[in-house]
Image (cartoon, rainbow, N blue to C red; front, side, top):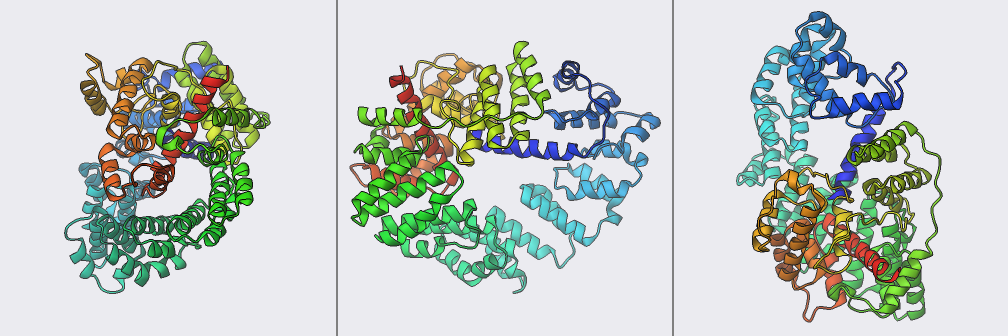
Length: 625
């Protein structure tokens, strides 16, 4: 998914910029000269140069994209270097993360033991052989605390096989806790017995309790989970408030809500341990308000939870605050106040709750169920979009990135140009900077950085329209108007070469195996579904359109159900519908309640973002001309 992947990219680029800013370096060559060398070093043929060539480029500042790739190639070259003079000069220059490079460099480092310790503690995946070699040579310098820190790093990163091996290197009194934690994390059959066998002090380990709460919740052992929460979770969260604790708490509240236990869910959802301006606190207030309003019929109590959301930073949360306040006021029979709240929410037309508020004002009662809206709604939405204020653009820093992107576009290389503009967005985080990046992306015809900037601005409370809603790949579609570009905007940001961590490819983020199944079910004929073929926009669009059509058919043409299936998988949606079936005939509130009760925040946001984008694309395509 583009939003999630872009957050990962953002984190990596920010770390790159921070790490490189402290390096002293000679002046860099002109952009065009530097760009020519960059293209060689990051390209498919750039894997076998001498280490010195990579080192020379890495010394240039300010940093450029794909530094991690160049660093990997630099270390790979070091691992094949035998000249001691070169190794003496280059090995200490940059942190070593590849075991093969460290093995070649160890005799040439001023403090090889410290580098070995850093590698050991990193939690990076090492082969069994690499672990053994590193431990045999430097293990005597690793303390018991180091061994525990490595175990925790491996556990946190999901390197479970390596974590299991690491347990044998822990102190004897640490091993039972590590085994119990890993068993809970993996939901192993022996998790209960391992937990029960621990002494009382280890049974209060905060990480173990969080893992056990999650395992009990996922195993539908809600009474045990609630008992454990009351016995230990409450105190542990109060002692050390964190996102992890709040996330588990609200997940358990949602599980109780789905199990038909709204009062217990309400008590758990009312989480005030985090600061009011945090997403965790706002999500807790939103769920608490919805439970109070929709389950407990307590509109006054619900309003108290909803009103603070109006002061949130993000557009989405502000709009939620006003929309749900309006719903609470409706139930309280304060119709004029409710309409005022809806009008305020409708001033956020790029958001899902803003559009729901507009539907309430125009008496459209089936936009979620049918995916259709009235002419009054459409014209009102278009007017609201067209009257949004235009953000002010500022002066960009790091114009070298813009210059490189411009040269690449002119040379017919938009894929690499996109990387430079994405980095430009990272180093210009202010609202004015994001608008300037969006302007540059629009001029260069690069949709992904424009979409990325619109997301960044929305998180800061600023709407960007019509920028942020490009459609560079219009196509004939058999699905509802606006749905396909809305999914593409969310999945890839219109980057045809996007590849997710799960190896989903292209505009609609298709997995090759799933694409093959779609082609077969849709009788699309001979279609190449290799990863390389799926980067072709037309191939990806054709298969993606067929997949969305198949999901709509499977889920009765209810768009939110189909979107949930696209994000979380059809089987999981089958289970959700079985566990929480909306009443028949389907109503707008029934579908909305179903969305808000979904256990995955990512899926809820996915549905809401695409629903909002779909309406924008549709009314713009249908009415703007």
